Length: 118
Image 1 (cartoon, rainbow, N blue to C red):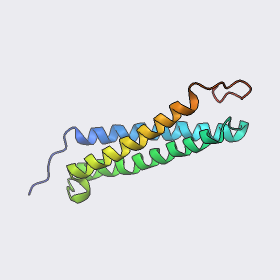
Image 2: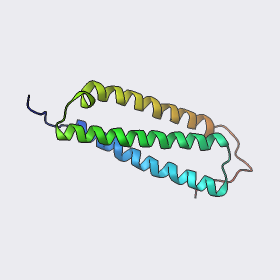
Image 3: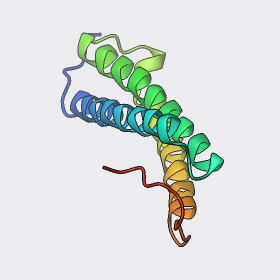
Image 4: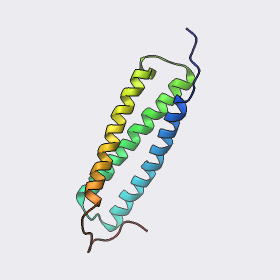
């Protein structure tokens, strides 16, 4: 069976990987800043760790899927069903983190707490 030509699929995974890399940098920056000036809430620190986990998860598997598809190594791990399941799990992880971030950061009074933005 000849290897399949890569179409738009690797570009999707490359884009996901690059976005996750940017999010890893932003979350790391916020954790570093929070360690220097203190966190307003302990749950916010835990949430940032969840964002770092999601970023690393997405970078590792997004890059792996990109490499597997471009190389033409379409085995069980690089199949369409496998990538769909991974995308579903990843979107649930990111959606959960975004929902918790919305609940933590919106609707509360932060007066008396130091700002974490510059």
